[in-house]
Length: 468
Image (cartoon, rainbow, N blue to C red; front, side):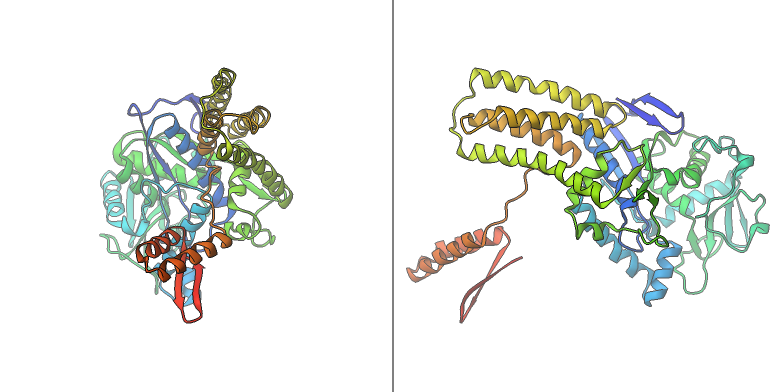
């Protein structure tokens, strides 16, 4: 398996730090609003990377944080007249709903920055002790030039660098020993949340948060650190400087970054009026379509989003789900007999599709080519099955399709929603059971419906029902 490493700017063979295990950190969103589709791309891409490692038999420790203290969160809280924690708590829950709808697996750990501040303070203390950081009137800065490898990720020369736009700035450049130094700790302003530290009551800089959370939950050395390419500089560059100065070890062995996403061939921004949240997209499309669309391009290729391209993705996804539905229909009608010799031979041909799929994914997670292999499988399924196929053969094909689509996070077997007519039929059966004083059966029907998300309410006008 080869991965494109941003540090070396080439594909490298993946060799884990510990055999059979992968330690992976992905920068999560700042939770001050609903996540936008730019946030969704790394979520979908690196969830798929995780799924593929698990498919290959690796035990994956996958950590992705929520940045729940930030200027944007504080400003939103001031606008709404609430505590900053109320904003972050609300939008973490909304983010999780969107992630579930995109079929993104929960991380092994979703740390919150505000819950890890004591560890960040300890990390900053170590940097000060080692001479990599200094205190100026309660603000702690990192001495960028002291870290000899600064710029190795972004491939920038330190003398050509300018500090990142998202840096937490304070009273001015004149406080710093060097304009390139960045903030590790900043004192609080009026009305801001704050935590105690040896330097001032305040809060950590953005960069130190991820360094501490990765170290705490994955260790001083990790296999993969990932995120959008907009994070390469300064965020990930600064993470490396902080982490490696503290531990003296290589922070992450492989750095993976997904490319930007544009809207109708223009950069997404509120000023252009083309800002799209995942929640807005869900009003037009099932979010499985968004996931399928995102995986239709290699993660390192720029991706353009448009309604037309989403409609094409919807059609492509339906080709896969329709094949699965046809298989399920044939399975429900098929005789439960052993597969014929010809069918067994066809099942053996599945190795061909699996090889194509794995070849694509082993080549730096080429999801576009992996989906092409799945479409080849779909064509094979459509041309080699009918009402005369045996159940064993049909089930074998379905299980194989489900396995490969599962790596992509594409759902081909949804729980079927019980139809209204079937609900009414069961209610009628329950009423008859009650008349005959068969209360055991009546209770069984109520429980059966409840298990399917149907709640019954006995009223004077009769039995009413609703979906939970």
